Image 1 (cartoon, rainbow, N blue to C red):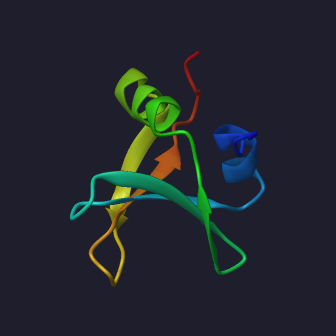
Image 2 (tube, helix red, strand yellow):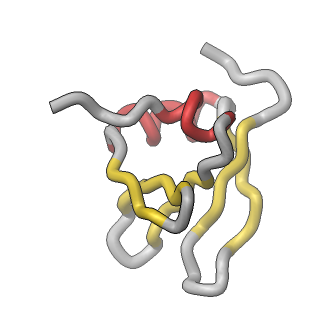
Length: 71
């Protein structure tokens, strides 16, 4: 099964979130939760391609793309 590409989806208006309760990353786009590759999301968060951008009303951590994503 193919996974949703994270960076292009974020550039298209998706929001990357992480639940502190389950420690799972997911993308919200057009009011839908989209499952993503957890290892890829953790790698992007740890390499500086993503930056923390706050906490939503449900207590999920929200991430945004850094100014210059690192590869």
